[in-house]
Amino acid sequence: MVMHARSGGNLEVMGLMLGKVDGETMIIMDSFALPVEGTETRVNAQAAAYEYMAAYIENAKQVGRLENAIGWYHSHPGYGCWLSGIDVSTQMLNQQFQEPFVAVVIDPTRTISAGKVNLGAFRTYPKGYKPPDEGPSEYQTIPLNKIEDFGVHCKQYYALEVSYFKSSLDRKLLELLWNKYWVNTLSSSSLLTQPQSSVRDKLTTCQKQLASPRKKCCQ
Image 1 (cartoon, helix red, strand yellow):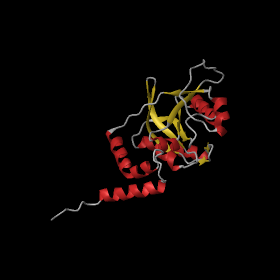
Image 2: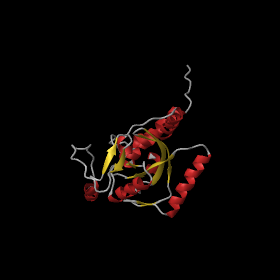
Image 3: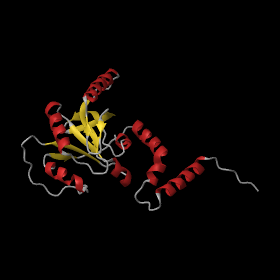
Image 4: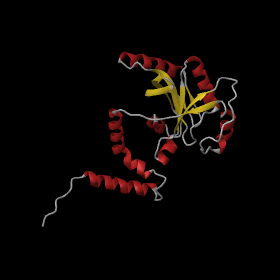
């Protein structure tokens, strides 16, 4: 999901998640991207996306993947993990007709700069419900042009606790991805003050030197 979000650049992307429910825990087992029209502020699912969604789930069952659709995800490039007014309406509709269902938001920009996944999982309150006053939530910066949308709808949903697990295959894939992309990750780190192109060139040179066979020394 993070790589899909990252591939969208400054445009929002959207996908569906497959999984199961165990007690009060929603377990996400898999996900897939949806062919949607994305802008810098929203994603719009058209009829083709819903047809693709239905076909994907049906084909997955035919190859032994019996998980059901359990949620949707989309990206907020650079402006944090929360639900906009459109997101709230979408999630309310999903919870009305596809319960149980969860909404996940990923910020690929902050994920890269911070070096850890910036992700939030949310569910909406029933329409008309007024949540009790709560203490201050986890601090996050919201761009000025998003503050109004955030503030108007922030009491219509609540965040879920998120934890991660991985299989031995997942672990191996993550290792392969890290080996492939570690240069780009380091060179884009906000902790580095040198010009990005200079850092990337130096890291690329180091990587090539490490990958080349060592020469034997002889007298």
